[in-house]
Image (cartoon, rainbow, N blue to C red; front, side, top):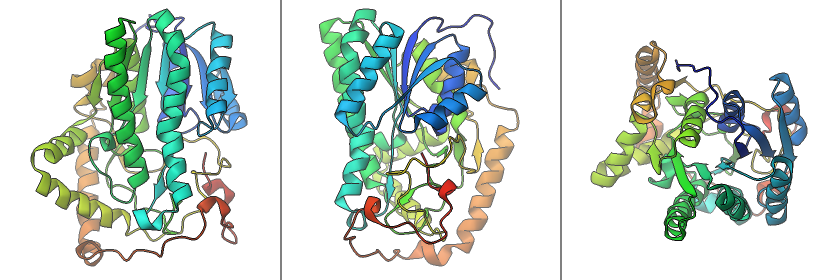
Length: 366
């Protein structure tokens, strides 16, 4: 339950936001606009994003770009600079993922995850950096707990996020050495209620079972806004996220055992996944939520300020989510006690596989 203020805190700030058509990015669009920012939004599917922005009454330039293509990434930044007359903030939020163990994921699918989530972010930031130096501006990136902790069945995504954190921390030191005035910030959330799971590209053919408890996309979006207003180097967002981060750093055997159960939980999903899924397709309408049991964060207001103060019912929602998770875990005991069988290594990438007969195109995401 955030507090409000009549004075926009980002009035006139020229902001480039990537990954704006879904989840956290789409939620952040309205929040940045409400703070007075001038926005350029980047997404693979521009027509759907334009319609969504129009419905919200937001004045923003929308640029279509596949950030896995360096020329498109560079062109998007150049267009943003042309439209805005420079840049004050780059919010790097784009990311994709493919579900499956390492040998189940085709190399092309693995590489595309890294190309969008890591290399695409690097290309955008590199192209924007001279303009940010001119304005002594800011880089704000959606990191992840997976920049710090492994994520079984999402190896390419975890690898890309680890690489992104290494790059951005290195860049922060370089900019400090150059006294450029450019700040580099990362927000690291845990599980988020976004369309990622429902619309996942899956090497196993099945959707991953959704997390039993997640943060609402709005929580992470507000964290990005607060970090743009007052830059902070790294924020591990929320108590659940902090707990696993600390556990992995200081009690590795226990953390490994928990992550093994996480792997089996995700792989116990029984619904068929759409092909090719969000890694390659842009057919689904913009959406913020993936209908995952979600809540706000009890710790976030202590980390980033009162505007992230949660709804008073948040403790009850957390308790309910954990109770449902416990019941479901008991039902899944046979699956959670033994390794899930792996599929054979794929011959073709998901991009080259035919959609299943009768597949609902709405389930193929942006």
